[in-house]
Image (cartoon, rainbow over all chains, first blue to last red; front, side, top):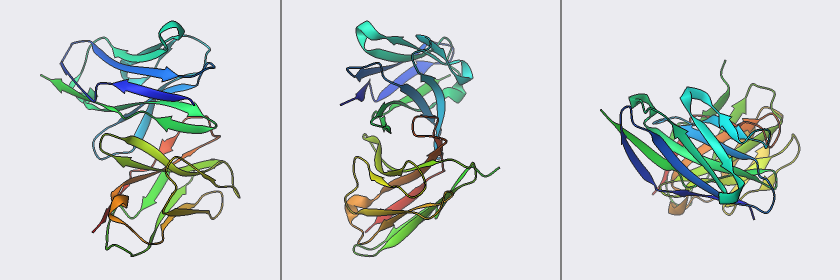
Length: 111
Length: 112
C-alpha cells in the first residue's frame, strides 16, 4: 500500500538558511504526492503537488520539491528560511482515492 | 468567502456522551473528508464521501458515523464518546478525490 515517511519530527534552522524537509514514499506505481503546511491553530493548506508532469515542482511561498524515483523521495526545500515559515509540514500521498498523510515535521526558524 | 466551516470549535464531553460535528462547504465540491489529528501521528482519515450520496471508511472509522446530508454538508457523529477520541478534528473538501483539499479550522474535542 502506498504511504509516506517523514524523517525528523522537528527541524530547526536559522533565518536565511536552507530548509530541507524529508519525505520518502512507498509505491509500486508513480504516485500523486503533496506537501501541505499547517500554521498554528489553523487547518492545512496545499503547498505543492506532484502529478508526474515535471519532477521539480514549485509551490507557494518559495517552496519547491523534487521527485526522485531512484530514491523514492519527494523532499521539500526552500533556499532561505523566513520567520513566517515556522509551521508544521505534512507530506501526503493518494492511496485508493484517499489522501494519506505522513506524521509531520515541525519547522522552527530562529532569528 | 467562507470555504469550509466547522462547528463547534471546542467541545468537552464526558465518556459515553454523544455529539455531532458539523461541516459545510460553499465551493460546490464533490468530495468531503473527516480527519483527526493527534500529536506524532499526523492526520488520519476517519471517513470520506467521494460524492453526494456515498460514504466510505478511512483509516480509523471505529467509533464514528457520518452523514452526507447534501452536497454541502458532511457531519461526523460520535455515538458514545471515549477518552481515546480526544483529538482535533478537521473537515476538508475537494472538487474530486485526488485534487487539492481545502480544510476547515478544526474542532478541538476533549473526552473526560
